[in-house]
Length: 566
Image 1 (cartoon, rainbow, N blue to C red):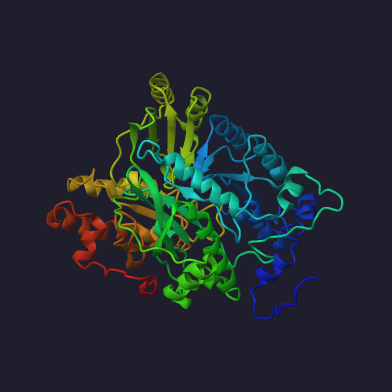
Image 2 (image 1 turned 90 degrees about the vertical axis):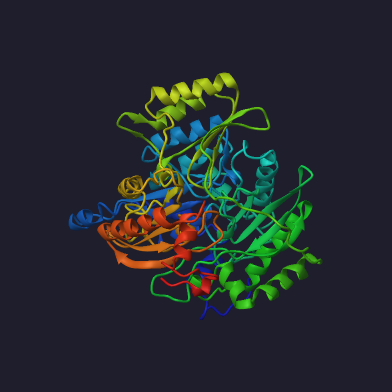
């Protein structure tokens, strides 16, 4: 018998989840409806738990409306792959599906996984079913649950890579929803007669108040931006082994223009746990959020707001109450950077690993640069792995010396050999934005490469072309490309206009601050020219750009999210 709930003050999504019959909704009926390329409004919310977003091609919306046609509906499909590690066979499967059912490209995301774009409703089931043939799934890649768990990406940088990627996988599996809806709807798995009704021992009938994100890093690398996560684990290494993890809670970068009560927040370290305790700690943090998160206002529902409302000490006490023991005191650590180290490196496993820059995370064939074809041939050649990074890049991992030569030859053959690029470009991230994201106010992925080229001209003029500066652009303030941690952050306000934020730091531990609002490209370049000239002339030795603009008072340092201004 269902519990009695007063729905008057709760958000509409709460009732939708409650009445969805453990995430089934009416998806089967929506998928079977031949009249429209869309699914019902309620099912657009429920489908997110299955890793799917309904979208339209906004470049075509106006013309289609003029022709009295419904929008050009299609779907984004996002995979769940903890730690971003794929076999060559899995890469080839995604490559095939992108051509067969999607728009012919692969999008590498900032959560270390793939997205397919442009999948039509009639092809959704076949796409997911064929993914499953290579042990790939989209369960909980979106929705009000724990999403894809990230981990340190590069095996060449640490001998502990295998350990943390295994930990990410175990966390992900432990926190998966238990509903059988996914397998019934997409894989035709029928419930056994008289089988036990679905239960969600962790999530309950309404799941979480909002999305929940987890990452694991190994200092000095912060390639997962651990302070942007709802929950993060920072590995502590002593005597050549990971002995435990510092626990970070309450990160999150989404905000809403014009709503001061919404803001990005960097996570807070609340203590340390032993390696064997990580799964339990992750579960209890999630449960405290489940029971205390705001279910009335989704814009206040993330863990960061729960912690700011409760206070860090009270939140920590609730976690420890569920654990039955106290977290230990935070252990010292040092973070150097949150970007990727490019090029070939030999790892402690005696294998070779290539970190390859993928601009905007978009894998495609374009003119004479045939990246998608090159990676397909590499996948058919090597016996190693493909690892996606948290910065939209790719690692061809675990190859021997002979395969290393083959990889280089294939990249050269298809016109995509790794190149020397500016320090700015190698530290860039752009979200998808237009034309498919319904939340975007402005361009990001399609525009940032051209803007960087223009900024590179300024940097080169002042002898700073190789200077590493973190730049990130998003089409809206929701923070998917983690722009609020960038040294230069650009947030779309309207077509052609952006808010310019400055002062994040190079290792991803500090928020940036609003410098100029609603400015055009011409104004962006003018403002940056002035600051870059000053930086070239007056920086301290080894001072990073983000630290410089704080020291020179171009912007004030943001010490906590509630100080942030839109």
